Length: 328
Image 1 (spheres, rainbow, N blue to C red):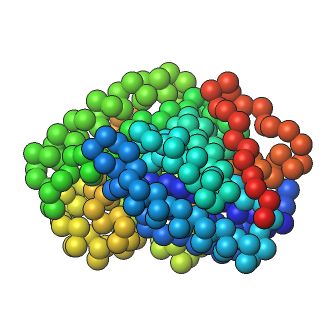
Image 2: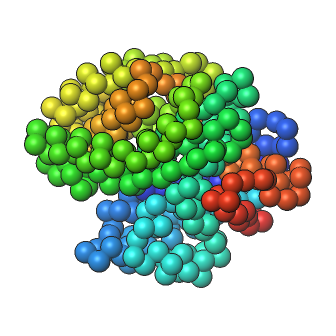
Image 3: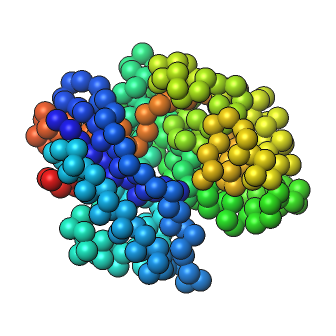
């Protein structure tokens, strides 16, 4: 069957269509996305403005038509930190449902972290042993570790690349002082979740699953996306440290010429690099593997499991119910 996943993120709004069936790997069929940074539409009180809501609703209607045109049978629609943390998030969700008939499921940070981990586990398999996964989004950093399909511990902290760029790196290129202060803020924010995660013991592998990690790996020499998902890609701390320094001295226009950096990420790739570097240093990790699967794939796989077992997967108490599908 053809499934659609509508992802309302902090940097982009993205519809992914896949051909999938229980027991088989989901195969991407088509996608429709737009660079829409909802955090850029926040007013002084933290509300998403009418203009931002209009842009969001316009895209959702486009996505619905795109999914119907390509004969999708099921649509999973969700949103993450951009709406979750806005002051008028509940009103935005209600307006979206009223004007589009699409009900967006608002994932908590822990749910987002857990479902991303679930996808990474399925990609790497059981022989990977205990996995520590990091995922840098626009609004938050997700940290999850475990030896099963769902993590033993899942964190979400406000260290997204878009958020940090907006709040800390206001000049282009940034000042040395602002970079130094941001480094200090990142390490202070990571101190507690790193300690709690390390209490579980050392992982067998460390993975990174997000466009930010893929871009950083590409900048530091990993294979391009055109070579497909099966090529092993790694990100090494020594390379990351060097490039963090280089990126801090570059303007966003200069960063656009780097491999793997899109227009939408030129400003925030530095903040992503600083978060990644601090996390690897604090976890005492010298390198990580880049996972091609993340949150969207996790939700697709979970939906397929529900079709087989006709019920929710067993999950830790802190991971809530995620099912929210609409038949086209």
